[in-house]
Length: 315
Image (cartoon, rainbow, N blue to C red):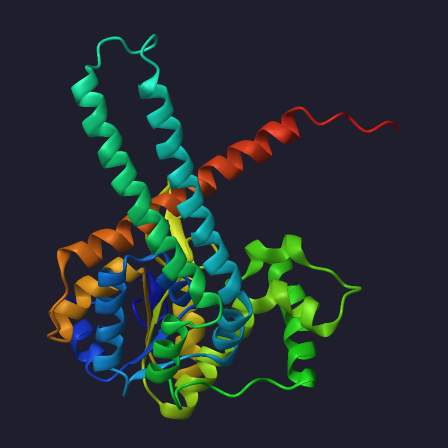
């Protein structure tokens, strides 16, 4: 039964360790873009781990393309996060300075609080400038280019992309993973480049399969994607990689496919690659995921409210 349905069975630790000694490590676009959200210390540590294993890392061409296309947006989003934090501190400071509203705060304590707020705002402002300067002088991009030098696959030609779009339409209708959660982005009138966007995950998936066929090695994919077209989700809990993906990969390549969120990748790297990973780095990757989950929940709530109050169509 296990041979027929490999995606439904968890491999023993010993076998996973063996796979990690020979596999190729691949990284999704979101992992690279999230590097701009890490603290400097944890980002340096994460990149150092990749650098130490750069003889076994690889990027699908589509991932590299998406990273370079969305890099500026990622920098801008983080700059906005700095602005929101600075505004929040300023607002809280003004509220506390209102003696009528908070008569229980002594003048001495208020001066100390104000001083700490000023120092915090100053540090955030300085860090924001360093981050914003990456628009032109991007040290993060330069380090990524160094790690993945000669480790990026070739692009598909236009005929191949048209073939994937046609294939993707059929797969998405049948909810065959990955990528079908992006079906709402489909635009049949747009240019080829635009029409490819809803099929980005599928393009990446086929490029991963092609690499495994070429090198005849198992693949470990690290991704921050949390959607059900990649993961089996049961009652809000992520159980593991979609079994359909594991089976398709096995059928196409005769190799094994594993997929992990960054925090789990780091934990397994300690066990299987003999690398040092700080608890702070693991914790930070978890926190980023929690913030993304919270943002997704808020977005779903907003969509639900809009749907609830949408005016009925007149027929």
